[in-house]
Image (tube, rainbow, N blue to C red; front, side, top):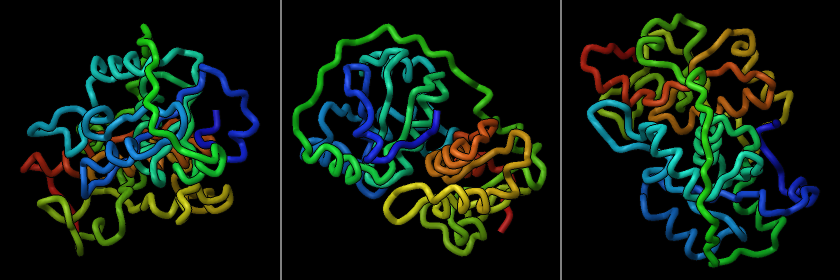
Length: 271
């Protein structure tokens, strides 16, 4: 299934109870932002999933700033929102990255019918014409995931990665260590190449067109099982989704990403 959907395509689908809208707006500068804007207004029938509470696990010594939720916790979340195997899941945020993280988690659980709404909530408003403050209450389900651990690269696999198989999704200044606003150490993981997620999306929060994406990832498309990371396993999901849009689905995520890498003092970083 193509990993994204545009507003005009929403008009072509039959709206039934088998469609689940997911609102996962968030701000790294204000953890309360997502819940606040959801309460103020969201797309009709959308449920809210929070980056820290639902799309991440508890913080620890290792695992990075946004560790993956445990399989048990993510299964509980999917059941809580009433997900069923046949449901089409349509995810949005204000732009793209947090929706891409949620998309990756649904794919990890083996749910194939999942897309990101390009253009975020504004695109959805164009289709719906309005927002609502009504919070849907779906009956809990007995959803049973089929987790795909082949989508994950372990720390040991990252250590063993050779040049050309490991890609850093952050901005160039963070990659080269000239600017590091978040992590305690600046630089990148040895053997990583830069492939900034920001180049895959437009200012309107849509994917770049096919030809631009193909040019962006021309060196990645021939690599078997490439690994992507970012600061904490969020924005790297944009690159992974974009590659899926090009038909390349053997891409792996290093979930803890750079913030996990530097939590091990023995791990080197390169400027």
